[in-house]
Length: 422
Image 1 (cartoon, rainbow, N blue to C red):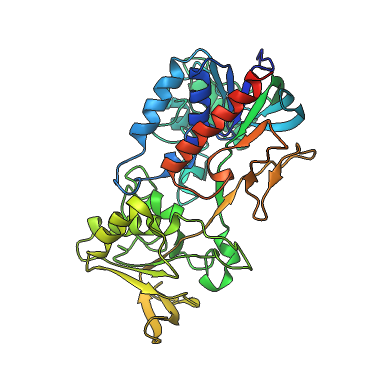
Image 2 (image 1 turned 60 degrees about the vertical axis):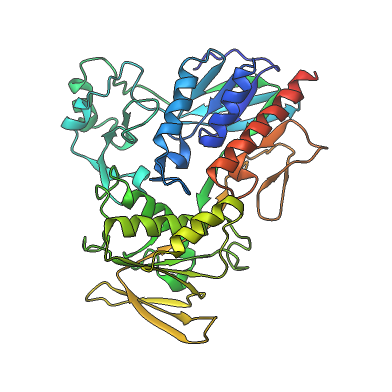
């Protein structure tokens, strides 16, 4: 049971991605006690899984590390990983919140020596790489994980494998007796920064995701390009490891579709353009085709769009691809549709297809949810009649990292105003 003393002058931040980290830091550095909870065993959220930001094409680790350093020296900010909200009662200025924490089976003594992983043979799908490879059931979530501490998968607890991990640890860091716990918080305001999920591409049946291994999603492409990813940064086909030199990027895969996501997620076009540059950098003779309905590249991001267009090996085709089929022998993918600018039919074969799936907000899914407002698509809205719980980042609207940081700062200010007036 965690011993966390809070008052109604404290703030709870739910979600340890870039939005949550920003909100927590801004509020705590302004002089308020903040508790941050994150369901994953590490902080950083989906930003930690990105290879490069657009438009500068720089890695996210530098920005995350700066924030982690700020957290380490901040006495007013406490964070809990593998934790989530299980109950919220009360109203603005006076919330009682229950936090559930899942067992990590590894305590603060962990030095990341890796000896537990050396003796464990059981493997599990790697969630950080979206299941594209395997990791040991005793694992470090990723090379830059914060906190830098191993995790034991529950599947080996109570088994001989678990005992091997316990015996291999020289520092008493393995604790197989850990159980699920909960603790209560008293807070005056809540910032809900729980982030988003990629839309389930298997629901878009005519694209064959889950059936054809060489049809992947945009978040999976980020991990393929990363040197710490499942292929060591090689952009190759999942089916056979062949170099993927001719790749199709399909925009709005389930988005802007009344049968799936009716809205536009805004950032998918730029993400696909960025990923096309990954391909071109790795393969000088590689070819990328981006099939789009409309291109969203507003304001300062239009320069990035123009720069990508200048690459003669990256083609933009206005088309909503209607169907994908697979050549069972080669694993190649045949795309069929219509070029809506020329009226010509499209029948073209590619090594691999990347689906630009939309962003689905992580709402407040509790048996007795608090009184907050959502729009028709499930995004948290700001209702002046319902103060106290404020959305931040992608739970409010689909947006990029820079805009999420700005939005999180604004949400931190709203939370401070809520408790400062009481």
